[in-house]
Image (cartoon, rainbow, N blue to C red):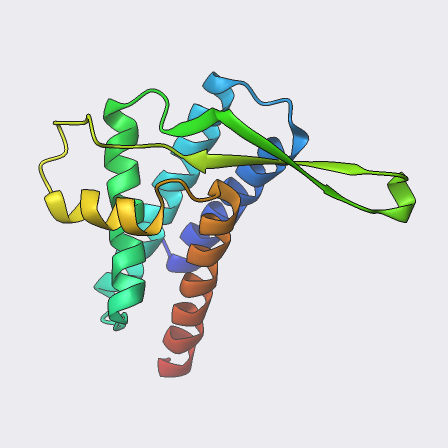
Length: 156
């Protein structure tokens, strides 16, 4: 599969996950499915970019390792995200007067997963993902991938 097809699938999977989270109607099983799909395509995309020889900074490498750790963790942990830690923020929006409720779903803990044998993945996960917004972290990894794709295009 071409990298452009993999990136397309990753973008659809991440955008769908974010839309479902923003809908505030997603239950545990749906989040598990959408998160797994987004992690799968993100991991495949990162792997193809890494195999192309493009260099990653230490920070970028840490974030890619964290997402690989999240993908491995999801295989062993039914609830990788914290739906019960939902918070609501308020912001004024004249088109939806008077308030808009925003829901935040965060990455959960992987401390109790013994099946992940790569300690470096757990450490990266704890540093870059644990307790952080699912939406923001996926937007961040998409930004890294887009930068790397621009580099790849310039090499062609």
